[in-house]
Length: 533
Image (cartoon, rainbow, N blue to C red; front, side, top):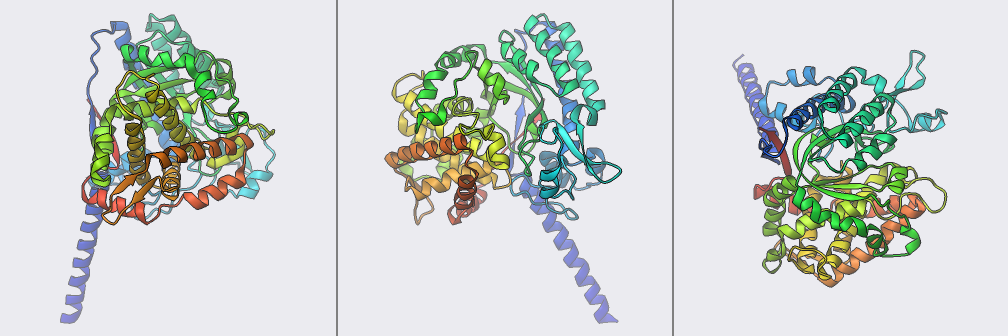
């Protein structure tokens, strides 16, 4: 009897230790994201009408958040209400569910791996079933695939699936359209309402590009297809509420007129990047005031380039928006500390804040360059490359953005004072940092690919002291060669090459795993999370 009692006590102690360790583990996962407070903005230059419009934008963004929970996981309130541990609840809020965005694995017990198609498709749907299904709307970015009562696949348009929240968003945007004194803003908001009602965003995308005179901006709706790891087509809802930095925007927009020239500067066969960007392409410098849905989940982006509609890109162009406050926080909290931890001493002074800012500018510009339609009749690049298109596109924009930034710095076309070596060192540091995003996300995959290519090319070398040296000539050559190959793959819709490429370069090796351990021990966060005042 005594032995049984001792065994029971031991079992209880083991359970207590296990639960304590599990809580501690989740707490350490939260520490992967440094908390950044987004302060209340200085609205001294904004009219009372403008302040009311901003308030309505935020309310609309909150409804977007509800839609995204449904797209990615399901019932938010029931899920979060079931979590009593504060760290578990906070990490679930950061990730919008029980799956860690870094590795795609569940961090809570009782959950399996994340469905590859999130909640855009039935979990029991097979690839063969989807491919053989003759439905003209199945590949739309704005339809859910469900099963009807008879068990057959059916499409449901987003505006029907999320009708309640979309109706509220429309109401907030209508009120904002009534309040604003800017005709271009009113036109955009009314066109966006129609887009939300119909899931046709062609007119709203054009109206957004034509909205140039507002100090505020709202990006809202189905914005990115990253969560659809099955087919890479279904778009997740997200929203940004932004305040423009007018002086810096004026400086950045000097680059807009040079988009055709920048396109011609790209490496490789000109036939692989013959797309002509529309003449209305522009660049805004903004501070993020609020974000929700996909844009608030896990890793935070530091710039965007929209719209994705290739027809609008050809007719008008694209808009790049650079997030000044997020870039500053990312550099100070992640990029610069990674450089100090992992680069040999001689390279550390070249990790430069200005170079990082302009790298992001040219990365976003590069998203609007290259090729949008395959040159051999395979449709758009996204259609041809499927669920690997996003990783390829992100690798392209990182590599070619760096290529352009270094050349512009050498030609003194950039007002900031930094050298080509600063650009390349900061790029390498940011690539190393971004491999920590893991292979569960196209951004992470893209950076792992670029990192492994740099290693193979001897552009960077990992030495016995766990520090990196950089060969600038080989780094420059690697950018040219890799950039040319990416453009060729996209132009030809070469899926075989992509599969081989991802298989060869898309897996984190021992160097990345060692870097991860060093950075974790140094307490350097993977990314940031927002707290709004």
